[in-house]
Image (tube, rainbow, N blue to C red; front, side, top):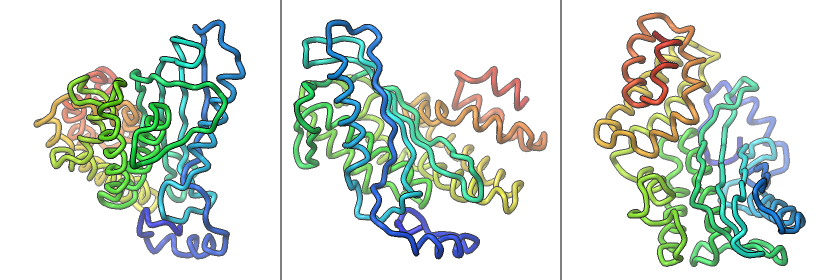
Length: 304
């Protein structure tokens, strides 16, 4: 592994040495893009086809960091745009679903990191030009939303590899938010909602949410990545990391970031801790039910 996302444990040194012989310089993201518009009529299909290709090129063709990634190190992510309304032939409304994951070492399993459905998505597209973006200024909503989520994907991935390693990427996402304040578009302002792009990155950079970021690191780097060396130790580390997030919940119950964490992770947590000893499940169960009340019945069924 050649990027600065993490410091590899000794058990991966030989693997990394082999990788180092491969060419460097691949882009950071491997993003699958799809667009559906089931309710939109009287718009040429080529408009959405060109948009899909342009988003794919924008996400996968840019260098988002100064780190060198091997081709096989690229971050796996998906974007699905659902267009619900054509305001005009070149102006649209809908939502965008963003997902990302990262591999678990010594396995073929990818663990989810981010799952968000952003319903505040308005954009213009005429199919005649490439998507342009500048971190220094707001150009349009399409490029700003895409770049924002690119940096959030990077931030969460880097957080899972090193303790608070995602900070530089969250700061860039925060810059995009700041530049969009006078855009007149939804999703960028604090007062519009408690569950939007503003609060997602604002919370990640807040001291109150440090336990959430700590969890991203210990749950993944010291848990999943070590699980095939010592499953009991790794699982205890992961449980401790989850329990630590209760500190954030006590101050900001039902916060957007905690909701998104469990949206991405609840099924995985059930699969991971279902086979755990009874005492371990009993320690974790009330904490999960407190932080993620929407899944109480699932936790009771599988962990109770």
